[in-house]
Length: 84
Image (tube, rainbow, N blue to C red):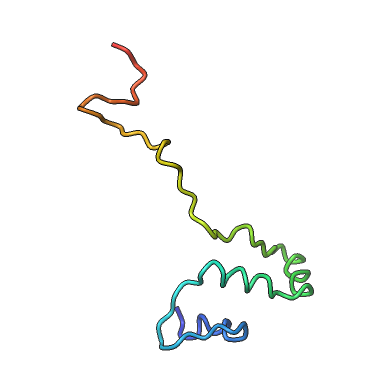
């Protein structure tokens, strides 16, 4: 990455100390998308780009434990539906 890769964030009020960079938090990405002016969104749409906040993952979906089935229990496959 070039040194000024995250430089655009300063105009949105995000300032990071030091020379290190980091990925945006979901709430930061959402805030940037929300602050895009309507006119800019129209211009982007004209070029085929549609900023959509639905693609920003805010939560990591984790299935409940009841859906996790062990593959092997006491050396016998639990998931096997084939009868011998």
